[in-house]
Length: 337
Image (cartoon, rainbow, N blue to C red):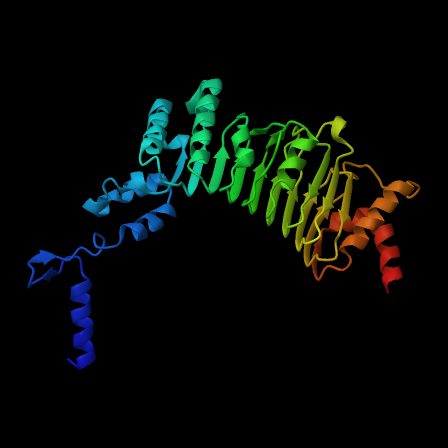
């Protein structure tokens, strides 16, 4: 065997968990010898369920899951709701002085049963993790009303909410939030969402997937720092929402995605920074409703919208958008040429 071959064999033997140190007389356990900080960082990228499963890999890991600075659980991981509550309480009661990197909980209405009790428990947990300076908050929890303490969490970096209720805040100051994802969230009114966005001083990315009863008729996105905005409207809407308006005032916005057939008006201000856009909208000209060329306010709105995205370098426009805006689009192209 050549010298390189012998080196490979020796390396393989030394790295094998089954190999033994002949001088010291004990088996080499590379997992056990890893720094605890590195192990916790690795485990933080797994769900809590998977973290506990991997505790069997080493005796050192047996209770380490309690000290991982993050919780990622779903109610469906448990057969009984009380067991789920006890597990979360036990985790939060361990090492209470440490900071939390992540707190992610999923809702299962069949398991919870009593929604009011479940919401009260979740509100208590939220207050606890905010005091523990949580950085990433991710909640999917029925009709939970978000506690006011979330609006002033200075440590929060990302906020992801699904199905919850956002009340009108007295004050919003989220100086570290860079990412917001809101799925099927119900707002007290237009102002509740507007204050949340404007209160995030370094917000970079906003994703909004709306429900058909979110209580927002005029959606105003005003941010001096926002770089990416992804908007998806609800699949169905009632007649009282026929004139939904989206107003975007974001001077640094680079990437824009708009997808909704039934939003009536899109108003884009400060659009010079736009680089990429994906447009799939019909300005509420759907389900057989036709565009009326005599409707001058509507024509002006559509024309301003098209002018607003005309300088985008990378753009994808759906066929339905081109169809309902054909007249104004053709005039605009002739003007620009």
